[in-house]
Length: 397
Length: 182
Image 1 (spheres, rainbow over the protein chains, first blue to last red):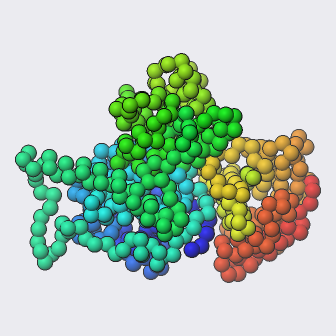
Image 2: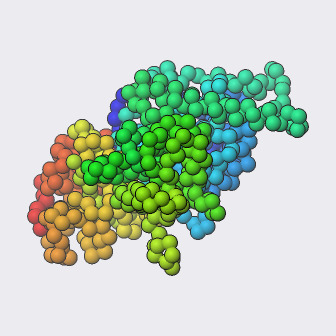
Image 3: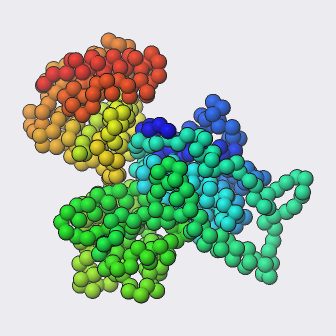
């Protein structure tokens, strides 16, 4: 093991190399490009024995990964923003076909207006595609999560594709020290890929993903639903096993920070959880019993774990870096649905912040906690509040 | 402990790389850190900003740096256009052969080093641009005491293998030796 200062993008590429991926197909897009450039370099130097397929679009990148995975290979791609949207038809195909592909999604805002900066709307737009969606907080976690993703995807109880979501620029271009595991350690954790039971083998010709009439389609979807339920357990097991190997555990589906006696918590996913943790430390010193609940997985959505962790809390601040116009925010809505059946229902207030890369500081998180506690005490409805909006919510922008 | 640094220069002078090397040097001493550029229209010649955070524990912050403990200016023409201002009582280090203009109102200790001459003297010129980052880092280790010169040199040799690493390590040494209060 060695400790190196690497970027989030380099961490993905290194994770792919250590996972001995066999097929990579990708199309460049900011801020993801450095991932596939690095992988191309590994392949060129002979450090990774993989087929690198240059394609003309993201749609074709995923199509190539689908073909490779259907043929039994370990396949990887990476994309962002518009690239993910363009790929979307094939993203849903990979989910429905139950192909254990891993994709890094370097999260970036959707256009228009044009933006290259961080936002979670791109990844979350694919939340019903049948992909497991994992979210990293640090460069170290990006590296670990990339390797873990293959284990989760290829588990016989799961066999679903996995997205590793990392914040555009905030993680992709940040350089942080990371402990690089030995190849032998990764090999023991992630053995050579066994083809799925339904892989394409020329010696045993078969056809898959053909038409399913109304008398069979639903069962395919039900199996997918079951597999996603199984993923909840597998993600936790994989996290524990990784911890035995490296000493690093991230908490399975949810990373809980100072939640044991918390009366209020900030719930979010992504790198800004670190800023929220700093805010919580400041609040604790002032006597506010606050915590952070970081979702490491948004699919499967960790309903049971979430209920368990927020039980006994008064209030929850759900901070979304995405927007569902008319709803108006995604995690807020999902968290409220997940907690509807709680015995003692916690007060949930929503916040929209950081869209298109707008900076969110520990100071913002402190204000978010105070606003949540105020809403709770006054018994106000937990509507969604916009943070850092120029001119305020009623102002001219 | 959290120490924040902002490097301001022009695309091609090596500001982003310097932030990474500084973090790598800190990690060699058992410290932790994080380096990142200001994300925008980086291109050769345009003003660029790079940041480094150094701490005695893993850095969890991922928001921007607003009032750094130290500002390192790679091109003194950028002083007046400075977007990120140094913390009061902090440290300002400028690449300049003489006391730079525009620092009188700065409430920080001001240092200067002629990193351009060091880079030119050692042949550290790429596409006509003197690459001043390692000389500036050498000077910075001296005036900040944040990391040892030996750690910086090791981090430089990890970043640039072979002869290029040696030349950059020498630039760091020269910067360390030649930095003065402005």
